Length: 188
Ligand SMILES: [Zn+2]
Image 1 (cartoon, rainbow, N blue to C red):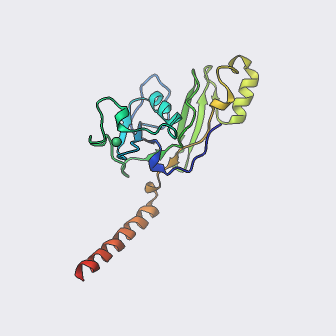
Image 2 (cartoon, rainbow, N blue to C red):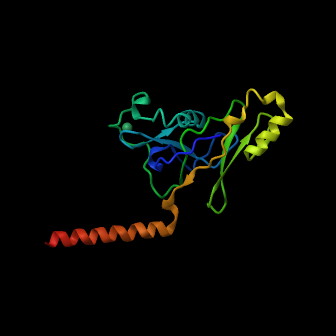
Image 3 (cartoon, rainbow, N blue to C red):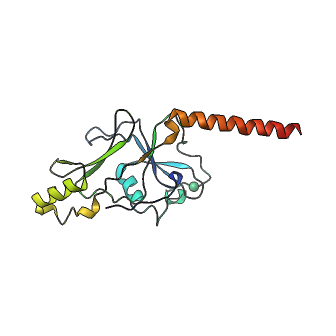
């Protein structure tokens, strides 16, 4: 189960693709984890998925700020800038952390249209939906206590709209309009 939220993308944790994970950990499509400071809006990299999932789990009631990281303040330069040369995806806040012994995986489709979530269970089984979790727990009652259904959430991140060319085009033309207006005002 998970909480839906209408928070703007900039307020929630963001992640991007591109870097490689550790060799022995099952890999999903996320290359690096980042959170945005609630005060200065700079992006800070989070070193591990585990730490990222911990921050994301309570992001609404406990928003992340730079001071939470040792020796870091809002005056420091951003770790990473949001840009269109990387593919960014934005998580919903407050997704429960993957239960102990499981891995929550986010896989990008080949055509980059959508991501899919699945869990890898302690016995290696891959589960793709709440219904599959229910069936799994019915077949393996020994997991019922440590892996309650409420800890599983199949919500997928939103893919950054900036990567859609028509949006880029729209944005560019609106910038051009703004610039023209500014030029006119200057002339007066
Ligand atoms: Zn900050």
